[in-house]
Image 1: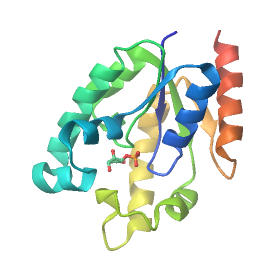
Image 2: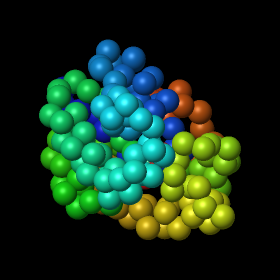
Image 3: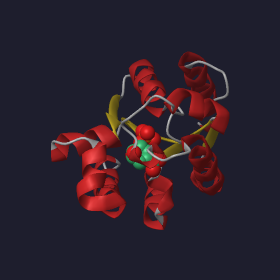
Length: 170
Ligand code: S3P
């Protein structure tokens, strides 16, 4: 089976939903950010500090290319992966792309105490989430094969929605 690739904003639940989806389908799970951290030996904020966002994006593109070459993988990506047109082309070519569509208000509630996301370390993180969402939502939709409404529903319910949509694609 081809890769199942989860995309969406920070706080959308890609890692939690991805793990559960992989467990149910007996597939391997990987998280692009975790892979980058494992390779560099430092956390994401440190990579941003030393190499800037551009350096992080280069590492992200490299990890995406390598991970999506594996079959039978459920992959959680970082929220900014769709910014690079080359990444978008890769996503479309390498797997079934699943967009976890969660409104900015809920993203804000879930990420407001998080210190591990450098892009949200700004004076007004709530506004930042809204801006990023406005910019990225069309890009997520452009590459998605499946769109799952995240809203208030729990990870289990999101996984069930995904499985139903996958059946319909078969
Ligand atoms: C980012 C999202 C993060 C991480 C990095 C940049 C983004 O991943 O890749 O902090 O640009 O939205 P999550 O979406 O898993 O939080």
